[in-house]
Length: 142
Image (cartoon, rainbow, N blue to C red; front, side, top):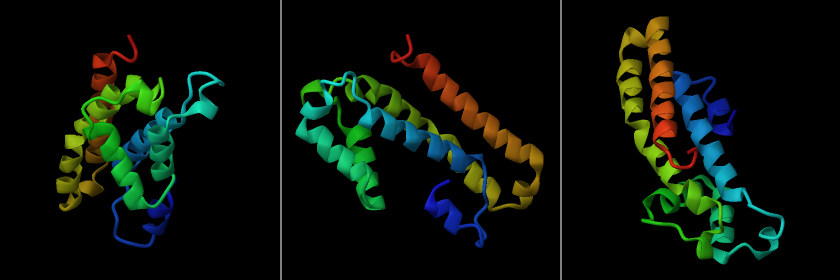
């Protein structure tokens, strides 16, 4: 669990599967960015990739900027970002862009419905379906 979530334990933050989906996404983004296709690639990581890795390991604002670099840049290139991350970019972008369903959780959390186990489960199911839709669409897994 992230420090940010641990710090929310004594607040009125409504813990939900949304927290897990964000964590799942950001962990996958981190793994794709730090993944090297071969041992030979590691000492030769391009400077753009090295800088991106430093931002992902940095302060929250640095991590947000790194996420934007991954999903907002039209096409990451292997010469700048190594061989693996450019292959995962479309998947990461589609997955991050699929988080529109999370707004529905915010609407539920502001009402009394969030105390209903069925609503909680519905949000978990929507997140899973959203993720699976991106996986099926992705060229990364074909």
